Image 1 (cartoon, rainbow, N blue to C red):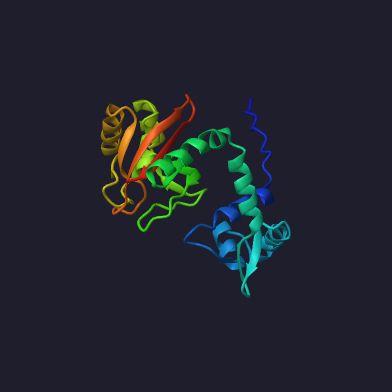
Image 2: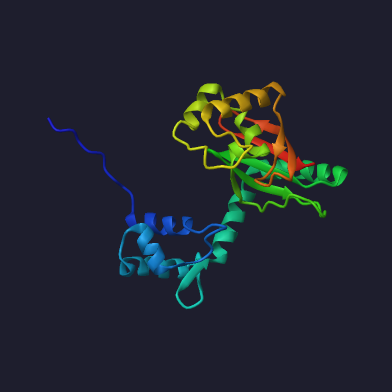
Length: 226
């Protein structure tokens, strides 16, 4: 008997459209259809209808003669998604109060795989401050907020999460190997979920992060700049 192959219910055009949106980031703000086609390994004519659909729906917009950039629909949908998360509504007054009492910026972050996703910010205007936009993703192992989120994982779960992740592409003092990361997180756990270190990739901006809530599936943390 031959094995029955599982049915593939994926929609290729939708998959390509979402992949196109994921091509944009802080370093890559605009792309041409040729760029998109090369990354998708398809012809420019095949990507044309997808791009035009995204433009019509507001997810992309023209930027110059042949380039495109993210449209306002991405931002509005992103904020709607973040606002729908209960943790933001619950944590907001506490972070605002902490900012008011310390005059320091405070951020709320959740872990999404190996990334720390910033879902709220209580901004304190200062000459030297951490101003991380909502929706920013940073590698957990390279930031104070990210590391404190990793303390919610068991040693086995931490090893499995980073089993196929390269760590040597990030500048020090971020750990460059899995054993180094395991040792660092173990030290963070010994401080009862408090982590002192960089809150961003900028070494000159130290930060302090603590666990605000923890569940079996997801940890949430808040942090502030010193």
